[in-house]
Image (cartoon, rainbow, N blue to C red; front, side, top):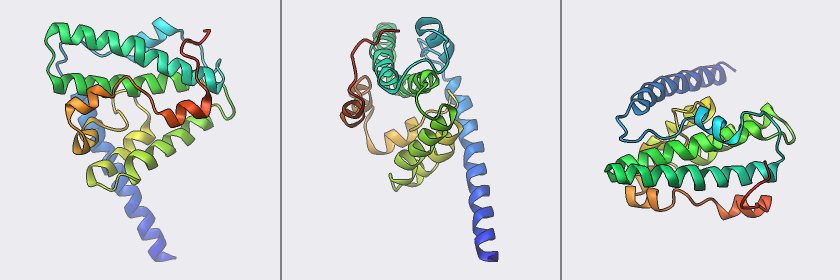
Length: 191
């Protein structure tokens, strides 16, 4: 029993330390001098509406795809025109995808509501932190669980540990065929 308590306290301390480091890194990433700032959650609310929990799962997935296609590609074109570096494009892409995911999830009125948000955050932590089997990916666990717009999950650092900036940017505006097929997504939801 004592060993289990020590292990749990050590795990809690490790996660707290990792979250502190992630918040520190997120703060500097948020203030990264982007030539063109990636759209914020507020900008997405202004563009796509600020309703809460008004879509079903299919509409939520469709909205996510719509945002990364419209907002993401528009941002990339503007950033390229401004002369953004490839690493800046990859970092911005990571932020936009994460913010788009958070925004779309805030609109999901399907089963579970906010409980669903935490279940998806836990899934993100497992997929992007635990299953990646790298030290850098483990640091993504607190970021996934925190669900803040300036700490993307997966992080840019974790993506760069296994992909090039070219790879990140090339796949930035596409979505997982697995998740798309599980929700039978329309390309333009009626919002």
